[in-house]
Length: 281
Image (cartoon, rainbow, N blue to C red; front, side, top):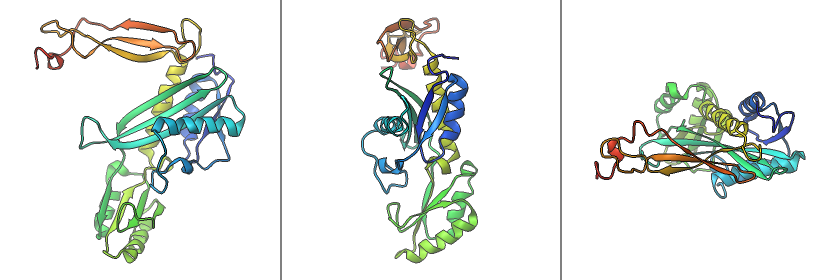
């Protein structure tokens, strides 16, 4: 167990139940106490239900929550979590969910970011058929997830949230269809963390990634967060031996003192020729 945060109080700003997965992970790994900071509506920083657009990047939003947690609680260390759902950069037909859990330590002057990524727990349908809406809700991948219903379109401001049962879906669908000039109703999986178990699981994974980084200490200053900061290409192709874009080495860096160390990766197998510009131009 790392010593940097043993017995320390870490303040977490959240209103969607994220403390339920972040606190046990960090407390078990670091010996700290995670306390929820109160007094700020995090929906002001952006909502997954699109009423409030997020200002800035995902990292900036998570950092802002961590800084607000410090200000609201008086603790020296703050935690903030922010998620995103978008198209995968390499697979345009796949939705991707990325979760960040950011620690800001004002006493040490450091920021450390835990990251987790995977398929997005999302689906939607625009339909006038209740049966089609129920089919979306019944998919095994969405078991336990909440639903959101709107008349007309994905951006209609007349939104109904916290739909957790088929009876609630039927009532909300009928109400939205009455409000809809076209009869169409937009039904989607709720992406808010407290209504989305798969997002919550990924937040737990991001917290575990953060814990691992904080438990890794710098050989120069013994501070937390000594972790991979850069990958250096150059792994030789196992067929022709020429350098590829596959990583040959990784650089670890300390967020506190800035110490850096390069680790050469195992070159025994080499890079697959499909990544070689000579073998696979």
